[in-house]
Structure formats: C-alpha cells, structure tokens
Length: 260
Image (cartoon, rainbow, N blue to C red; front, side, top):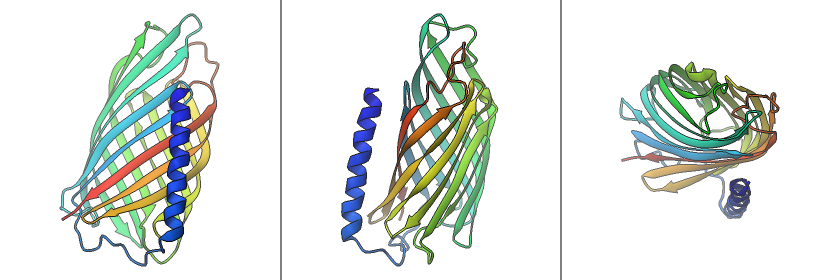
C-alpha cells in the first residue's frame, strides 16, 4: 500500500510537470531527432497495484543499425516482482524473476510502426512459506511472442493510438494494452485499457495515460505514466492468484533512444 501511495504521488508530480511544460512549449512540427540515427533504445518501468509490484529493465537493438527503419530487431528484457496472497491456510509472500530474449521484425508504414517478435522466456516464482497448490510454483521456460503497433510521433494527424502485448507458454502468461490519445507535440493524453492473465486467473484495467517527450541532443526519451482501476475475475480463489484483490493501479515507464 505504501508503494501504491508513493506511485500515486509520483504520477501526480509528473502530470503537473507535463502540464507546466506543455503550456509553455509549442507543438513541434517535425521530429527534432531527425538528424540522428538510433541503433539502440533502453526501456525501464514499474507497475504497482494492491499487494503487488513489478519493475523491469531491457533494451532494443536494431540489427540494421537504425530503429527508425524497417528491419530485424533484438529485444532483451528482465523483470523482478513481489506479490502477496492467501491460499486459504497461510499468508504467502511471493517474489518472481523473469527474463526473455526475442528476435523480430519491424515495419514502418503510413506513420505506423508495426513489430512482431518471437523468442524464449524464463520465469521463476519463490513462495514463503511454500504453497503446494499454487500454480506458479518453481520455474518454467516457454516460447514467447510479442506484437505491437503504434503511430509515429510528429506526424500530420494529432490522433495517437497504440496496441501491444505478448504471450508466453511459461505459466500461460499474457497481456495486451490499447491506448488512444491526442498528440499536441511533446505530450499525449488519453484513455487506456488492459487485459492480462496467467494460470491463476485473469484481470482487466481501465485508466488514463500521459506521454511526455524528452529531447537531449542525440538522446530522445519518453516518460509514460498511467493509472486507473484493476478488475480481477477470481479475487477470492481458494489457492490464491497473482493479481490479488481489485484495486487501483499505477505505472511509470521510461524509454530512451541513443543516437549518433
């Protein structure tokens, strides 16, 4: 709960920062990073909801040397999280680790970036005390597929949309998110919806998001913040689930492209 309150406060501060800067910064007619080539981009973030949090870090590498062109891309992603649940007898503290390596292809067409990646995923869940009937015990290796489509920034239309998600056979874990927003240059604001789940059950989220661009010469980044409410279909499961009770949620994500 303390983590959720901290993330709410951080989200409010970031939103205030976005508003102040957007009110003094005119919409940009063209991408200020056009003079650079970006072969690599990093990604990191945190998601929090009741009795659960996850942090992740990773990166994308363009095998053709330019993430702004069609071509093969390599992705590496690592995450760590903690969650609590009650299995009907004991209060369980759980933590998990996840890592994947994926190879895929991206196509940029009509101001939309499409991508599809496949690879190998590893997950490990540790429970204290052990809960023999919980479906996410131990470790699992699976085949993973990820997809995405997102409108390019700094285009003619101010309408922004994005859809992305992934699925792994490791514990049948999946998620998908859709966002629809209005782009005023360096800021995008709008609603979002999620569906996500694993072998313990499914959940859905309804909320709002904001994106804010940061340009630092040959480095271009985006801060994404979102928040809303999460619905869980089996919050009272006897053997516990990975999504806890229905509650508010919050996310923070930071991406940075490194150019030359």
